[in-house]
Length: 213
Image (cartoon, rainbow, N blue to C red; front, side, top):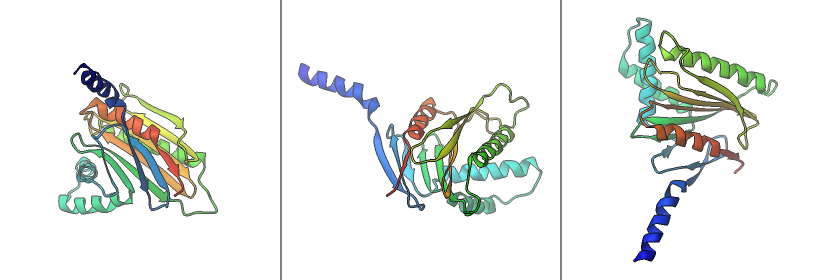
């Protein structure tokens, strides 16, 4: 009996360290490999309802801010169409935390992507984060930009921010990079409902590797 007790105790210690390896082939004919640190996360190539709703809320907020009339049903159709540009979603349905991954063809062979283009996109994203915060003083929040190395990506910058989203608690991680001839975008949002979401998503992003099939 004591022997079984030791076994159960050992499994309990090891359980948090278990990961679930995933490999998804994207339309770019690239395989995106990553590890899920727990079973709290789901993976889909189709947009989950929570991601569509988040986009609709974003469009509604801006129309309300500008005093424009809108039809929510029409905005939902538009949101469903726009969000289809993303190739992969990793999400926690219970807390509405989600990562969107998109490979976007650059389409201009004569002008390949470079670090300056990525840096410009990062600056644009930070401006959007600040605009979406919807608070009078943003100085109490922190946005960090750093160069990151992801196997299979030529160059990437990562944005980490705790800026509010329309005044509400919010965590954001954005990775913008290129693997010629593709732009690579990874955008993560959570409503700060569970600290595990942000910690585990950092682990997921760090485990990402791109590989040829």
